[in-house]
Image (cartoon, rainbow, N blue to C red; front, side):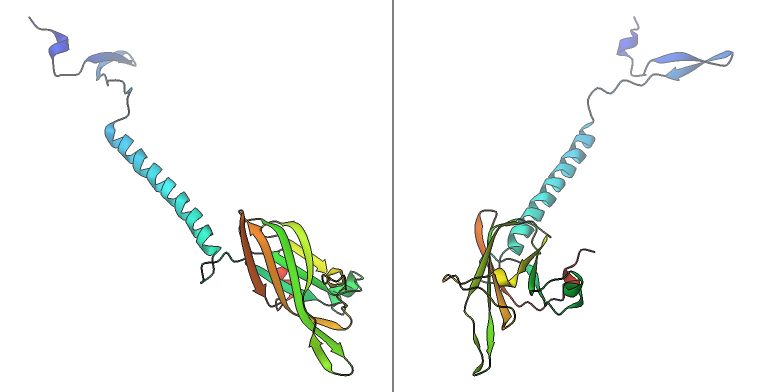
Length: 195
């Protein structure tokens, strides 16, 4: 006795094409992905997870300096009251512009400026540290500070007319870790502009 279910041949069915009927081999329905396809999806998934992990590691490593300490990355420029842009904006004081060059927020930011005071009797003398704080500087964000708003712990304010900035110290919390940097304010204002 011949049973069609025992045959190795796939079942056929007739399909009408125009006025004639033609036998067509029926394909079994796929309800489960073939093992090759599952293996390929696993490889792609592991690759994507690996690339994401690598990106996170690179960001954390870039936040470290050669000594292994957390370091901030920034561009800093001084815009003097004599600059054309300051005159166009009717600024009467020098401005310190800082751009966060990191990929993360800077929280609890402390900016410290050091420089020289120009005197008629002794030429110039160090000013000591003048500080200013800010809650947050987002990544890529340009922030500016009026230099006359910086002050010593004694309450003495920076005087742009007689003082010049030589070094800028930055401290902030990045992803819960305390980070710092010392930057020379040698960038031009045009380098910090949004393009």
